Each structure stands twice: as structure tokens, then as C-alpha cells.
Length: 285
Image (tube, rainbow, N blue to C red):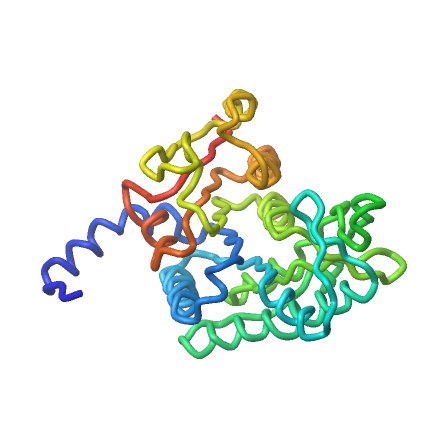
């Protein structure tokens, strides 16, 4: 795309009020799904995060890595099982989840941010007693329900201008490792940090009145509206736990939460630094 210099300058000028609004504020970004599979798209996302960090926004990146876990399990000839949208995680599977998320995906993201001139540090929910868990239920095995959140190590990283990159692995007092849903983990982190915003980069354009029609995007939702939207079937299936997590984050002091399409290049810049945005914004009031 060829843009003349005057247009470039006008774009930057229009972004200034938004930059000022978020400068020195914490924005937690949940990242996963198909946006992690496409290398060109992943590079664009990391570049956007470095840009946001460079202009003074304190970025915390919380990532999943389901496709990478699935690929590794397939190589090991271990079948992936899901119940209610969550991976059934036995002892063998949780070891793979820990290895892939914390050892491979996390470090790849940290390296990519560094290669673009950013400063990132890789962490997991096990580091610094960050995300303490108990088993979610008897069905899912080592899938964790978060019971305690400690953000000391994340705050320390932010104070030194690092981008904390957090893999969604938790622990218990017995030393067991737990696989945590990425939306749940990101919401817990955002709530504990009292973040200005929580941004969930997903595989959809946002919340739709008609799931088959992108033009029915709902641009703004108040959490008091969600019971009615669930009753109407507008919020259903896998969207319910995602929005439940966002609602919890808002109740814990996060100012606003967004669902945006992570498959669109520069979607996070369009959401945070333009008047129109591009996804669905959730507010407590």
C-alpha cells in the first residue's frame, strides 16, 4: 500500500489522543488460535506490540498455543480430547502442555519481540507463584481453576520496561502443573493488575447478532446486558466462558475489555488507536 507522507502524518496525528489515553497504562493482550499459526500474521502482531510498548503503553502478553500442543500430541500419537471446549489433560498431556507452551511457544514469542527491537521476558503462571490452581473438576484432569494470583514478578518486569510474555500454566502447593484456559488466565492477570484494558485476539470479528453475518457486529456491550444476550442466543457456546472471563475482569477493576479479530493485520492498533475501533468493547457501565 502506497501512502503519501502527508497521509502518514495525519494518521499519526489522529492517533495522538488515543496514545495519550493509554500511555503508562497497562493493557493485557490474550493471544492464541489461528493468529499464532500464520507466521506472517504472528510477526505483524508482535511488531504491533513492540510499537505500543515503544510509545509508552505497558503491554502484558498472555498466550495459549492449542494448535502447537495438538501438533506435538499428534507426533507422539496421543489423542486430543475436549469436553465443553476444554482440553482433557491427564498427567502425560499436562507434561506436553508445559513443554510446548513454556518451552517452545513462549520463547519463540520472546525471541521475535526481541528481534524487532522490543524487550520481553518469558514467564509462566508457575513463576513467582503467579497463578495458583486447584483442579477445575473430576472430568478435565489437570485443567486448573485459579485460586490465587500474584503479580509481583509481572509488576517488576513492567517497571523495567519489559513486556511480560506469560504462558498459561499454573501450579498447586504439591508442585503439580495445570493447564489453564487462556481467556481465564488473561482475565485473572488483567483483574489483578487493574489493567486499563483487556484485549482478546480471537478467530472472529467480535460479538455478532447473527453469527453468520459479520455486518451484525455489536460494537459495545455493558455487562448488565449479557444475561439478555445469552437468553436470546446471541452469546452462546464457546463465547459464554470467554465473556464470563471478561465480565469477571471488569468486576475486578479492568476499565474495558475487547474482542477483536486476531486474523486481521494490525487489528490491535485499529482497536486501541482509532476512534472507530474494529471489534466489540465490553464495559461495566
